Length: 210
Length: 224
Image (cartoon, rainbow over all chains, first blue to last red; front, side, top):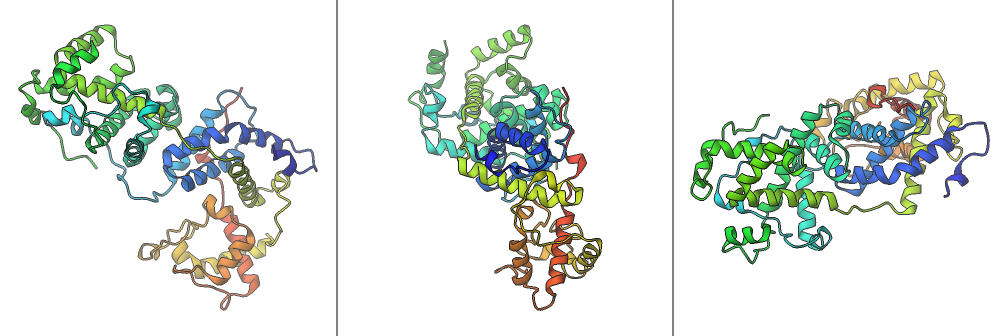
């Protein structure tokens, strides 16, 4: 790309080229991660910038191999932990399983309106898209990070553990709570399209799953 | 900050009628649902769970909605950087890394030759900058430039974080302009009447020197 044009011609310095490659290969991945974590463009760019700045620092011993994305995820995650929250949201608290136990029939029955739709079709519904984003942003940071790394970035629990400095067990537990949280947020927002089967839920449920 | 609920099980009584299993069971099932969805449970437990779900419409709906949640997360499309944004970001990174690297004396490797060297970094300069900073700036911006000085809490908007990537990426000219003329609608007043040009530059040099990359924040890169 234009990388070559702004690389200085002088000096035997392998770093800018190597760094350019690191940047080129991973900027999209990091931006995607940052955007999912921060929820808005500007903070995401800040985080990407911060991450590459820090990466630059540890770059000299970098040789380039498959784990480099994990390394960058780690830097980004730590940088994100240090970032001040710009917007109001859930304070960093622990989520307890108990708070997700449905307390009423209605709460049990809350559904997410995507029966019979592919995810792509479901996301045509702008309201649903926004509700999902907001729910994720409302998660306390470490739960959000876990959910994003695991369910959105598709890393294994072990990798997430390495990135966040937590045990696999802790990752799974956080992930579960984060999912329950998002599920509750999504379903409780009333975007629930009254499904055709809402009058006889048990019967039609059975039909649809058998 | 524990949540206020310690035992929610008794509350599940309300659902007792169609939802026939004892409330304690509910929590136990709920605890395992993600592992169930992710197919991580031993087959025996999995079978047991499936049997329960088949008999309990409530739980079945619950699982379906949790599964949908995960599916949505997995497929949420994200915006991408445009080519121009990508290159602008790259420029910012190199520029900011130059500012930080000046101290590390690796600046020449960065080849950030497009920046005018407005700020010299002689030790005397830095010392003067530090003194000026401590006297005039630290109360708001904090002794380390994090925007957390003792007056910070009383200000709205809060004083800027001077060591953030955002600030680091600004050019010397932009920052000198802010130091000289202040920021509208904030507590940041212009200093051009109170500080000489040299003093302003020294403060800037000191600010740039505050940007350090904390080693602990950056794990060492993976080795082959």
